[in-house]
Length: 111
Length: 112
Image (cartoon, rainbow over all chains, first blue to last red):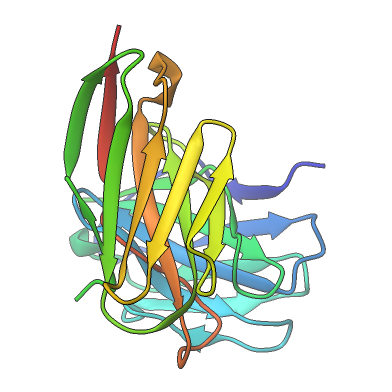
């Protein structure tokens, strides 16, 4: 039982490049979330998926897209990376919307 | 602006002392949770308190909730070096969608 896994752990991109962050959970949770964490800013919700087949914007969705591939997997795509997207990205899952379980994070640097 | 705001932003105490951190929020909630984040790691859920509860305990943790003041406190008793971490409160809104709103966190340092 791995919980929530994220790949990659680290990534360096050049401005304008694209990439997809992968997230998977093995707890059969309905809801999944993507957050970004910047120094001194806490966690900010980018997108979430309350259940398989649905996605909704969070607080800071601009520059990102998501796909809820199936109940286990929820990916985050940066189509054209910008330096302002340098951050640590966390995926989380939950049954309903409380008690979230977090992955280890992806540290992304955009040059 | 953030729904939840922790206070203080940073706290440094000696091992064995008690640590208290506070969280204030702005709108009515269903539940309030506290999470811990060790440096460079994901958040870990510590405790959930429902809006109709006033106090909850879990091991060395004691959480209080005052809905009239829209505030919560987390007390860690007999602190240990392993308690060094950032602590975040998170709220889910009565009229919100299925999501949590996190505060900016309190950075706790336990000195040996």
